[in-house]
Amino acid sequence: MTPATAQDIQAANRLFEQEVVAKRNYDALDNVYTADARILPPGGEMMSGRQNIKAFWKKVVEEVWASVTSVTLETVVFEPLGETGWEIGRATLQFAGDAPAATAKYVVVWKKEDGRWKWHIDIWNMNP
Image (cartoon, rainbow, N blue to C red; front, side, top):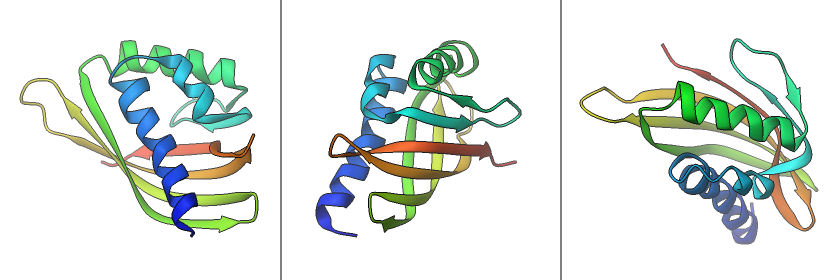
């Protein structure tokens, strides 16, 4: 992976952490997901399209994750494949108060859109 690609990948992941989760800025997802992205959430139906994904994350962050204070995404491996690539990673969710952190694992298929790397297919599940 080139340094420029690594920087782009990390920038998109930081946007999710810092803007979407921390600041509840769901419009930042325009710079995280491709226009025709798909998500495969745990225990839920597959969704496609950025607007549907934005509505999904708004509901999750504000209702299900209401006590989550931060999310940290950690890339374990990223493999570029031309204008696409895949990432395997870990997520750590921190909660308000003394609640222990929760962890998840994820796979993202990345795709270049308008010259930027964005999440194209996103699947994750929580660790026990």
